[in-house]
Amino acid sequence: MGFADIYSLLKKWAVFDWILTGIFLGVGMYIEKIPFSEDFVAYINSDINNPKRTTTVSYPQLCIFLYGIGALITLFIWILHRRDYTISAILSSYYFSIAFTIFIGSILKHLVGRPRPDTMQVCGGDGSYLQCSTVLSGASLYDQFFSFPSGHASESMAAAIFIAHLITEIWPSGSMFAAMLKLAPIVWSLFVGASRIWDRAHHVDDVLAGFLLGGIIGFFTFRTFKIGVAVEQKKGGAAPTDTSASQFSAYV
Image (cartoon, rainbow, N blue to C red; front, side, top):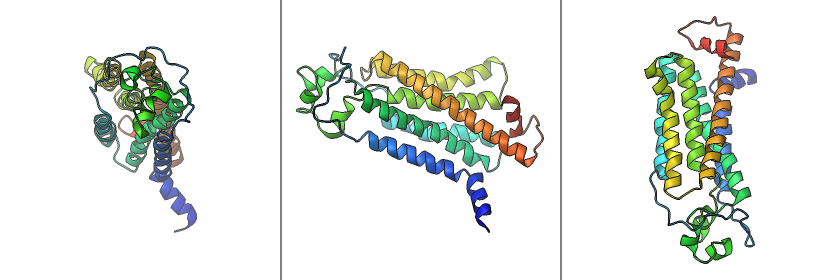
């Protein structure tokens, strides 16, 4: 087996996509651990004297939905549609949408450094970073200033948009049941985002920005996957049919 054969095999099973996904996820998680400078000052510090936050959907629970249930739904839909090596490609694309959202979100969190709605109640005083550093430390301190954008909202929406587009492409039916099925992931994401507002974990615009970020990434990630499938089909000379993944070509 030559280099070209190995490269073709790695590409066929989306190995490079998995590596890229892991890199973005790892770097994003690393960025969230980088501390602010000691003289950091938050420039957006309005509405930070709310009661302490509650938790409706914890991050571990969100991860179960994103990395477990969402991935299983994606696999189930694709396996019903096409049983071949593209299973690896669809799953890596789904995870990439989440990983890249985490990466971009972590950068924005550090650039903006917005305090959460309950900062004054948690830290006392004026709710400044200096004041919070006397009460909090480590990840708890950084997290208190990671309000913008909402990670829950962005990550859930990236996954929801990806799955909704997948359902739409595989099942373009206009029936009421089909419409409800396509909207279900988005409704779930909207619930997750709304819970961050009533839990006082994020400001309204934090959640809206998260929805926008995740929605854009989820859309373009799925579109990139769709185009990739169409290109591979053209290379292989597959003829479009209603029962194979080659019907993707009609949407490109």
